[in-house]
Structures are given as C-alpha cells and as structure tokens.
Length: 278
Length: 312
Image (cartoon, rainbow over all chains, first blue to last red; front, side, top):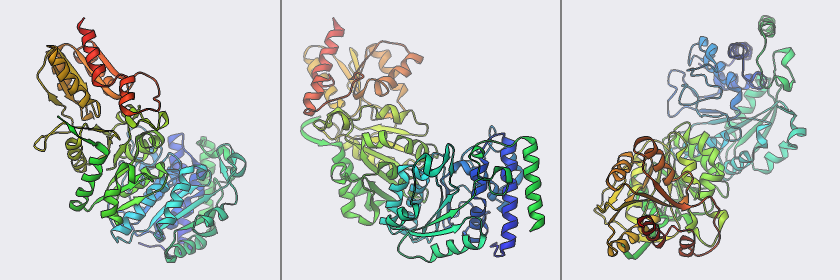
C-alpha cells in the first residue's frame, strides 16, 4: 500500500528511527549516525515510491534497493520491519549470533535485502548490473542505490558511475546520503572530496540537489528520476548525521557506537515527543 | 595426446562460449577491455546485446556481474587472472562468493607462461586466493576438449566458479569422446613408480615426462586435476597408497595451489612425502613461455629430472 500523505510518512520515519535506536541499543553496537541520516529517504522509497510487495520479497519484477553504505543496516532493517517483511521484535536480534540481521545486510539471510553490502564502494556496481539486466529483460524494474558521501572516495564508485552513464541507465536512481561526516571527520578534510555536483554532472548524470529530510523534496526528486529518460539520476540529499536524536546530530563520534541506557531512553523519549508534536 | 595440434585454453573458452550463447539465452558476457585477448570477442560479435565491455575497471566488472546474476542471468566475467583474482579479489569475496551469486569468473593469462609481459602480468597466486573463498568452485583445465566441456558444465552449477585459463597454446590431450566430471581428477596411465599430479598447462608436460620415463623403464601415472576445489581427495589418497611417491606440478606458486591442496589432504589422511614443483615463492620475469617453464622447472625435462633424482 502506497502512503501518499506526507504527515503519515513523517510518522513512519519516526518509527523507523525508533527501530534503529532499539536495534543498535540491543546489539550494543552498530552505526546509528549514518542510519538516522538516511531514514527519511528509505521511508519514502519503501512506503511511497518502490514497486514492492513485502509478501513477495522474491518477485522478479520488483524494484530493488541497494544500501551500498551497508553499515546503515539498522535503517534498512527498521524500514523493512515497519513495512512488514518481518516482525519488529526481530530488530532486537540485530548483530547477534544466528541472527538474520547481520551487522551488514546479507541478501541470503534476510528476505527483502536485494544485495549483500558492507564493503564500501561495491553496491553501485551491482546496481548497474541489475539495471542492465532489467533493461535486457524489459522488466521495467527501477533500481535504487544509496551511497554514503564518505563512500564515494572509493574509486569503484566512479567506475560504476561511468558504466551507468555509458549504458544510459535511466532506470537507475542513485541517492547520496550527504551528511558530510565520515569516521575521521568532515568529508572534504578526510578524503578531499569536493565539487560533487560538478563531478556527477561531468559523469553524465542528471543531478538533483535536495534536503534529504524533507519528504516532499525526496518524493519530487525520485519522481523526477523516474521521468528522466536516457540517463541515470543522482539525488544529492543533504542530510544530518544522527538526525532526529539531538545529541547524535552532526557528530562523527556517533558513526559507530551504541547509546548507553540513559542515552537510549533519552533518544526514545525525544522521538516519542516528536511523534506527539507532529 | 597430439603434440601437433596446439590450442590455448583461452581460445577454446572463447569458441565454446560463443556456441553456448546460442543455446542459453541467460548467458551474458563481460570483459574489461581485453576481449581480443580473452577471446570473449567471439561471443561479442555474435551477441552484442548480451556483451558488456566495462573498460579497464575490473572491480566494477565483478560488481556488475553480481548484479546481473541476481536477476537470473549467468554472467561470464573475463579479464586476465592477475586483474580478476588479484585486483578484484575483495569484490569477488564480498559481492560474489559471500552471497553465493551465480557468476563465472573466467580468467585468462594465468601463470608464468604468459611469457614476455613479465612478472606484473604473470598471476601465480590466483588458485590460492580463489580456493580459500567459501562457496567458490575452482577449475584449471588442461586442453581444448576439457576446457570446452568446462565452459559448458559450469553454466549448470548454481554458484560462483573461477576458471583459470592460459595464453600458451598447448597440445590437445583428450578426444571428443572423453568424459569429465567436476571434482573428479582424470588418471592417465596405471604406473606405480610415481604419480605426477598436474593441472592446466603442466598436464601435457607431465604426459611428455611420462613417455620419456617409460623409455628409461620407469612407469609413472599422470593425474589431471582440472578441479582444484573441490579437490578429488579419493584420487590423491589412492595415488599415495598405490605409488607412495607424489609429485605435484603447476604453473602457479608452490604456496596455495595444487601442491598445497594435495598436502592438505595427505597430511590429514595418508601422510607420504610430496614433491611440489611450481614457482618457488618468487615473481616471474619476461621471456618466452617455454624458456620460462624450463628456467622455473615446470616443464617435462624438469619433471623427468626430479623423478630420476628421487630414484637415486
């Protein structure tokens, strides 16, 4: 069922964020910062945009989502649970022994995961392969791939962008989670990545810049991507690492650590409050 | 074995792949700007719509193949062995082997027999790298007939395969009625004085050595290990029991390849002394393939010398 009401989508995104916090807190490990930054994007994709059916996770004609920044797995798991691929209780098994919810997404362990990811820089290449396959079969599938902004320091990403452009993959929509922080600090200072809009344009992409926490803008950008013919689209989504939990926002230190009990309670309280305010 | 007809396994690969493409429409072929050398150009000419040239971008090559396979395609991804198993190792590991995707990595120009291009292009560690990956089937075929069989056979396995192919033209060993099975080594001869366990380009060298030794009254058998993983344990143990003298020969480092595989089996199940012939923990160099095989002691002469030495 497609959710078109933006307020409803916002409420789902808050639930997704709560799921992220639950999962990371239960695991006592994980990556909350980058998961929270892409929660709104994933919510729009799974509840408003993608042609998917949680009851048929293997439908060959479904749209695909590749979370290339696989360390944000808690966000993907939380949105899949919210969508009904599996019970939300399962989030508590995140990163635990024998769990389907591996530290990084495993397509063979968890229905709903379209590609195994985690080693940065590899997901988009798989996305290019899927987009080519869909075109070969005239299957009409849309392929979405979420990249981290630190991740694009990997050279393979640019190999994949080149291939997407060469093959005119207008069924491929890349979304850059541009939260401007990586483990060791700010993107432009650690790896030296800059002028990204110009870089993507020069690689032959249709480039759309948006606020990655504004539901209307996310919906419009993806709609534009679907309508753009002859070339792939990249949405540069300006986001806030740790978005939704005040003390996690814009802090690289929340890239890869779990909250304490007090922090966990505070985070859930904040999110519950936001839900009421909405 | 017919020494007058020599065909490189990369050529056999290209020819059979082009044929297979007619029968199986799910087969797609990828290359990284080496299609004239890997011979995937033969497929590309017949099926341009099912051929993807990614340019000189091997990491992307593996990832695209992974994505295609998730849609039910059967991708054959080709480039030189050093760029496949070497440069794109981690892509193969995480995007193909770990999710057990149905990608056939057909890597040509393996081994020191690449020749003149020298050490940078002579991949001597690929068997070790690939066979240590869970889910991976690893093959290294010895002649035209066997390679054509393998190209076809691996399309029937649902899972990743690494097929090691060579640049050097080598004699045709088998005839068209020969039967093979993945994971089952081929025994040539019944000799009990020694067993020469070989793979790829060294199989024909081992057969030549067998003929020379026969004239000297030494009767050896040759075993062709076209499959490195899963390794034919039964055959290894049988040979150890029947000959008590095992020699392995490969155009690969003595660390990690056939020799190591054989030692792993024997050390646990039937310990006997094993002589490992191969590239002894060194990089290669430029030269003609036959000169290099001579210098690095993986040709028939070296095998004969080794066995005569052991006989003393």
